[in-house]
Length: 314
Image: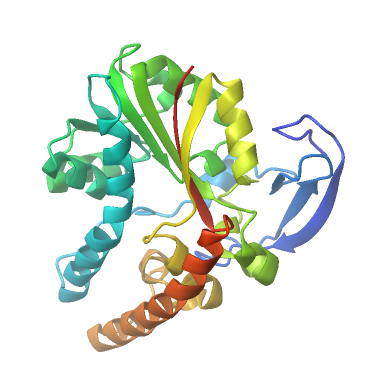
């Protein structure tokens, strides 16, 4: 077994074996273990580079089509993304730094478009060339394809950097956090969000919890793990939030009924008529609405299924 990313311990306990429940890119099952010292859960052994590549289907990110269902989905996503926009806007307005906001893993750029509409200078970065092109085309948000550790930006050039659901995918999260520290201007802000393995949903659902997203999530962090990594990379934690309107209720709904998740159905190429698609979307939306109350309660106790953290360089 490999050493723990956070504490370096080589002692761990196997929790379970899990398949790709959401996108079904492989029939293989992967082993999730937990560090006996610090409690970090992770895949061990980690998938090979080729396995990781195959686990990311085309258009893993959101890009609405031109149909009625696609337009409704964009309206919905704009509504729930206001939560992220508000958190980041508050962080940026509390900073004296100057420069653009860089969204790492920007996907189709909807978040960047919404920040741009609020008067912020924005730029995106994504592994996918198609995602970066979509951000340019649909959201008028400049975006480039690349890796943050080799990003074409100058040191100290960014007023803010966001990483929504990025760190759990990386085999070397310290490399990304160190690069972010170098790119941020003085008093710049970093906002990271990850699934929170300390949530009640994980305790209740175990391997069915959507936050595991085997095999794409290499690490399953609790808030304390992310904070330790941030501090080791030169950051000071300023604020935490355990609820995301976009992610917490939808994550619970997908945990219960992964076959109804709209993006998963689109990615898997499920054949369905327009009426069937709309019906499934409405059922899924009803599940999301039903999940709102329970996810608000767990978040109120600091056990929400995601954690969003604002930090700045020390």
